[in-house]
Length: 393
Image (cartoon, rainbow, N blue to C red; front, side, top):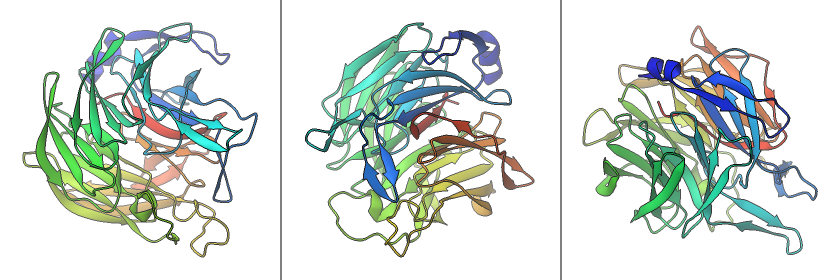
């Protein structure tokens, strides 16, 4: 199906940021949502005046070097899991959540309650704001391109349908008394996994067409489950657990201790958590390769902490696990950027794209001989990348 999609869909992407229109094969489009108004300085949150706008970057990763095709002004914020963005399988629409703005007069961050639906084929700024009852976080689009799930901070999962280039809210399901975070469909589209950020665990919803119901199945996780990814072989899911740093209302001092990633068997119902992977602190980003062979984790590892914190480190880590016979084993680890965010595989499972927020870069790594190799060819952005998604696979 992926090969057919490569041949069948040609889209015209024109740039809002100075690139001339480009006709491409929709082989491997990846979207990165970037927060321009926020800047982390020595572990402290700042919102400088006259900052760059928030943007959506559309990247073609089907050929080397990877090509940024579009940069679109959007409303977006780094606060939340690095999955507040999505793209349809035909490459025509993108969805951006987590809209925020900074009120300099009152020195406060303001969160807004809408999802942006972006027409990627439009020469103009084809953006529609779809209102929600709450602030949206993780977003996922199914492989048939007609259903969207949006995780809300109010504990509800919002169900959207796609008809052509129009999206509509049709339903919501209450899953938690706390916040929801990341969300991903299973490969067959019959289920989705939703991170229960404040209640610990993963909710499973059942899907039949456009009907989405709570299965009442709950899976074990670590503290503050955050980002979720599912392999294209239909066998595995991974969940990053960001620990105490992901919980609200705590003034406790964080010291950069070890956190976890959960490996979940989704090959048959009921799903089961089968392994916990120890990783450095605050694993913001986690991804499983489309072929199910690799798991990669982007951990802050103390690089998010202030300089007076004994757990402070200058750089985070990108870690690679090999998944064989149902067991994940760490095989490689390399330094990454400061307070990294999301991570994604290319469709061929050979490259990893990591969001380096402070450096404002998309770093690119190649898997070679079971090791991560920095290609040394990062893509420089004007705003700090903080959410990333591939086309549904």
